[in-house]
Length: 182
Image (cartoon, rainbow, N blue to C red; front, side):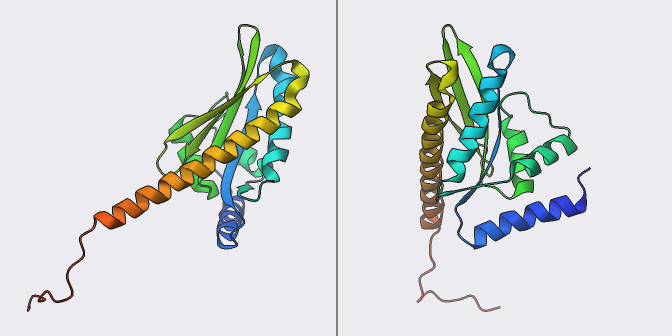
């Protein structure tokens, strides 16, 4: 079970970020890779975190806190997380989106794939780039960060549009309507 102090710190950081308008709170796990992709995945992961942390529209949760939470919750990290797991972690961390990714071989191509999950709805979108070579991690991370940011902003816009439609669907009671006498 997670210690109360870690949970309190995580909730405080998430709420403080939201109140300060510091960007959309996002959690990003390490990009995973197996076999000969392990080192490239690690480099891609670090560069992706650096790229996203420079965005003015995204606020990244500290990776050490995320890793501690994942290990304490015994959730493991084997590639991309299931939407339900992302939802659980996201709610604990106070983030709107949870990103998890992996490197994968497709014939001669190596793909960096990141799934972005909306913590509230568990709807997800996927961003990917092709690594031309093992040493292409820097270019891949930059391209992937750009795609992730665009998708998150798109998902935010879609969320706001849905919220406004829900409000518009509610029928307003005319002001001249008589109130029932009780």
